[in-house]
Length: 375
Image (cartoon, rainbow, N blue to C red):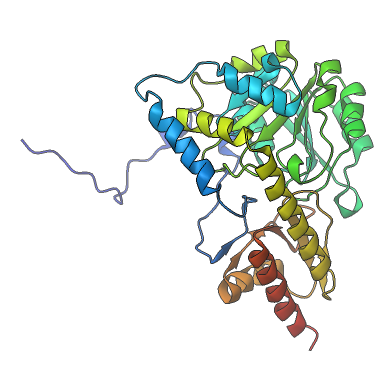
């Protein structure tokens, strides 16, 4: 008996019979992807500039090794929820954990949106909000930023009321612009609309003002945090949603059971016990960000925008952004994010803040490239 071997490169039958069953709104949306490009300095995904300390990794691995791997982890990791409650200053019953905060964005929108429901968000912002709105059959209404990427709160509120938005999603600090909302501005959106307000604070450790202390007054407010950025756990995927306990219970219905694995649960608990280390690492990123912005602002032909996140945006006037992107990578080994195809970000690149050595390299590369334009 022989078994047929399928060549993975061989053409397959036409997929139209299956594709017709996929919702048209989903098929019309581009997938969330990012091409892998080798580089000496990887500054394109807003990751922590360095790995967790060896002693933290050793503690995590020792605890994981001692745990039973043939058993499911706790369905509701109560000890971790209590630790998170202490860390964030909220109640354990109002905390959900997820396989990254992206899963919690998905879960929240899935329990809120019916077909044709409206979602309002600033633009440009994290593309997943639009993608998930489309997947759930909703209508996405982007609201442009004001000058210098300032949130237009009045227009966000007016648009939400005009379209009877079911949800307003704000990312503060915002990806990719680094813009921030004050807590008072977020609360204005809650109080002056009828929408659920999903406040994504993925980059809050690097700047801005959290609205977590006001959760008790506003059951239509949900806050998201992540361990992927300041905590240095992007490879382990861990996110947190904080909400009124009654709302958290409903969002939990959309999460898959045992959605966070044992290793990640242990790692999150260990990292939570080293808040001083995380604060020190975050402070170093903020210092690097401010140093890079100050230096690049001295160069002609470049606009550098303020940021409260672990990245910042530059707009190139002296050469096309795609050319600048390619030269940074090819000539200097620096990989950044080309965001110039997005409305409002024409000729812009987003640069993650790396180590001190990375910051030095970015400053040197830009100085050389933009020095050429003035000769």
